[in-house]
Length: 217
Ligand SMILES: [Zn+2]
Ligand SMILES: [Zn+2]
Image (cartoon, rainbow, N blue to C red; front, side, top):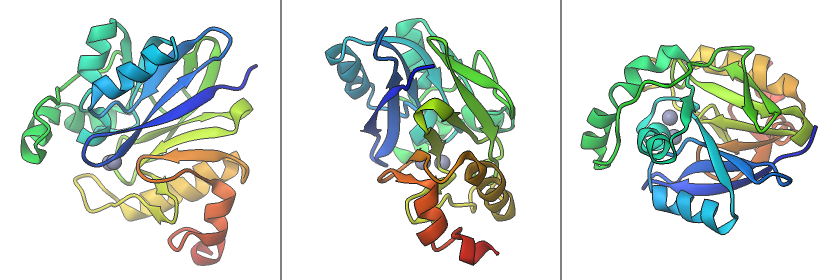
């Protein structure tokens, strides 16, 4: 098992952290949450001489999923994720786009819905999928144990948590997911949140005003 390389590419006016993840030995890559600004992602792939093989989606919000259809079509690759409970969101991306001025967003049906216990694969490297509802009902996160790396979308941020006041949101579900699914992955896991700087689960358990151990107990 090898460790994977990852680079954050902020996209859309919401500065959403799209992620390119690849295996150094083969230059086989995937992209998570290509919400928009696809030329930025494509330029990075070209410069690093990476071969894009899949698109993975954490949840159905515009800034995360708006560019998935176009990117997958251009490279003739599959879209995997989110969980089917976000069906109503990936089918309303065009409507979300019109409302928020991201006219390029396209609805899609993923080639594979993801669920708790599934694995996604980057050139033989397996990432574990966890269903973490609360921000949206179909939110999933990805974890690669060998790299101590997690892609958590809008579940958890450095110093904050995902909002739960949007359609399908549920604060208790979100807190449960963070405590029961993220924390057990280990304090030394570095996570890429959907927005803002990276952090570790251990750091958030110490200092996050919403979910630190001393707050949740
Ligand atoms: Zn979101
Ligand atoms: Zn977001």
